[in-house]
Amino acid sequence: MDGTVLQHIVTGRDSPAPVLYEVDGSFVTFMNLFSVDSWRRYTVVSDVSVEVVTDGPATVRLVRPSGEVLDSVESDGVAVMPVVTDHGMVGVEVDGTFVSGCFYTSADPVRTCRMALNVCTHDRVPYVERKVADFLRFSRDACFDADMFVVDNHGNLPDLPVRVIRNGNLGGSGGFARGLYEIRREGGYTHMVFMDDDTVLDFESVHRMWALCSFLRDENAGCMVGGAMLRSDMPTVVHEKGVSIGMERYGGNLDVSTPGGCAEFDSQDPAVANGWWLCCTPFLGEDDYPAPFFTGYDDLEYGLRHGSAVIHLNGVSVWHDSFETKYDPRRLYYYDVRNYLAMRAMGGNLDAGLMWDVYRHCVVEALCMRTVNAGLVLRALGDFMSMGFLETDQEGLHARLPVVVDCGCDAPLGVESRRPRLLTVLTLNGMLLPSRGAVIAPARTRSVSYSYRASRVIHYDAGSGRRFAQDRDLPGTLRILFGMTFGTVRCILSRRGLCRRYSLVSDRVHSEGFWRDRFRSGTL
Image (cartoon, rainbow, N blue to C red; front, side, top):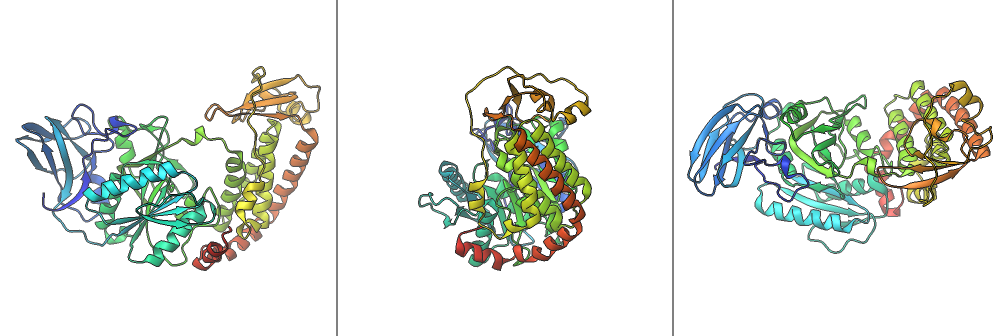
């Protein structure tokens, strides 16, 4: 093979989903299909060939996902075929013993691509050690230019054969910002890859990012290259592959073990943001840092602020625990609410409908007797309006947020039944009526009827297996509802002023100077 490898053909025998790599000698799979459409649309590559190395005689076919055979070669060890089609996706089938293979071009890269992998971690030593070992093993065999930087927000990583940066616990946004800062100080890199610590990753994905960026057309040079998130519990199913400017999430629940799923994935959605489980971005400006959100929505705010397209390729992905298997009310009801509102305000898009959605979110949590969650939403609204979280010690703030404590108690399952809405409102879902004892209710339900007239609700989250109890607290519920009503009305009336205030601080909180001060103080 004489040229530049665009995509290796990989077996993935130790991966969470080998079926996404090979099925009985067929590499016409999510991880190994080559998207002719994407490479022609975004890059200058015009000629592509495929090379397959086998152990002994073999028949190698170039096929479409539909089964249409485009070419076939009888091989004694090495088979080479030009990819003659100008559209769709192609893969190879091998009747014989497969050794290795790749799709390549005879052209030289049109731009230099030197990548810095920015990994942020907090007390996940085994994940990071595996990721570093996999990276070093892959980089010895693959021809791509990349270095790894690991930002340790917990301070417990051992010495590793990559650059480790000790950092205060500045959250995910502060960790990735510290990595960006140190990578810029190091110099010489053209692209950065945001990478979560707790994912399972085939580093072939990083090679494909590098290859794509090396051949991008001038008009696409500012694009991000996003990695899809596959679910660890359902490893052939996509959780998400990108987000639109209108916050529409793409790829959810798409099974890519089928040809139809691969074809749907290959259709390029108009995404402008991608989760930082795996996302490659060119360096844009010196004052182009994440927002100080601590955790949640920093990746989406970063992408939406740039506004450039996100390119996705089949196989460029990670496996990650599904968010349905995690239940942390601080993340779901405080950070997600506060940071989403801040992101919208920075973009000047804080409308009354959004505020009423947040209000209803709080009211439902209160009437479901999830008082801790409702209180977190109320606090998120207050902190968003005060804007103090942008300057404060957010690690200390995080430690002061209330948490739910798992319990081992039991009770009958609550009954979901329809009641007149007026009755629910006038009685505060039965809190003003005599109680009927304790019940069990789904922790994520939006139906208030499970907890009607309950004295105690044991909330059970099926995804995480967590169970926690909440006693009836009428005074606390009333305080939250009155506070949320007043806060929502106040926020709606002052939303234009809030947008102006967030716009005024936006440049500063995204600047290198802002973050450098926090790295020195160790606070966010």
